[in-house]
Length: 460
Image (cartoon, rainbow, N blue to C red):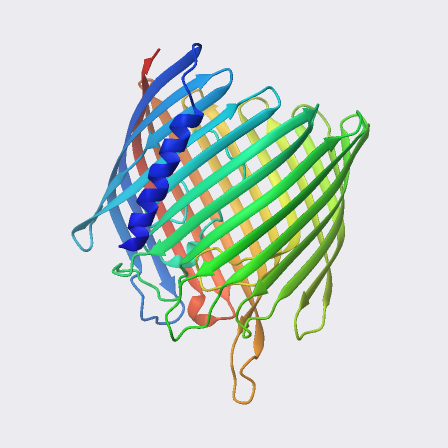
């Protein structure tokens, strides 16, 4: 009850600040857009081993209205959006109510100084941060909230995300930016899909970034970030509280037209409160080359060394890199293929997994407009993740085991626009997770059929 009350207070304060920031101006353009979506959401997840929280089928009918108010001027912008949903469970014959309320504003107080704020209150059972809706609103605040894991078994949760930023532009392509964030994540303990392994936390973040343009050829970026995670646990549980430190340095050179060379260095550190969770340090360097071959095609190649160190263990030398090709098929479609190797720490995806992640990610994505009102899209992905977990053993309570997860994803979608304001769409996604932790392995099929309407009602 206190968490929900606190969230309402935070949201109320955010709205008050936003209304103050977005003060009345003579030259404003205001608009009201309305929408309504209805459809069918089905998924079937089958685990390789029996689990106490198994409930494989998810079958819902949903109805989701949307109302967006937007006010723009030369110096500021303000948005208020409400996108709730009512979901009817065809298996259990009960009803769930989702919420998605967002407010955002930014303002140039002078030509050089800009500030902004946003707040989103979300109640959902989907890992998608936009609650599965098609939201075309611009992100006014920069950093993206941590993506929740698809492995949460569609457990219901609520999350409130508050973000603030201020930006000072002191020269062309040169600026100083400060970002502050506060996220509250709580699970619905009465949910049918309740999984006690899923995390709850308060996440506080701050980052300071400097982008500096020296001349037409040289530019640099320095970005320092700090994150504190206050995790909620029972008295019998070990604390998962963590401090994260992130430093990114990059130097750009564009002495050759349409060829951008970047030398970068990234440092990531995780410091855990519990002595049962070992601290981590990650160092990564990379030389990157992006070439724009034409207005339709670019390639991106990068590689460098990586060093990962976990307390109490030998350091691990490896590599990081990326190979990417993006090609626009005339004006109606695109194809993107990428392979990326990276190290990171993953502590805020809402699941029970945390710590260093060594990832290979291969993705193929594409989309094409077959006709003016008919679009198709598809994607294939393979992710290989090496992780660590604490597995106490007799005589060794601090034993750390390595485990690997292989994730295969295939998806396809088709959408049809008709009668100017209406869209019908069908999306299918197949996910297979093969984990060394056998109880985590599963196959998942998801189908979403949607009929939606959206239209600007007023403009003044």
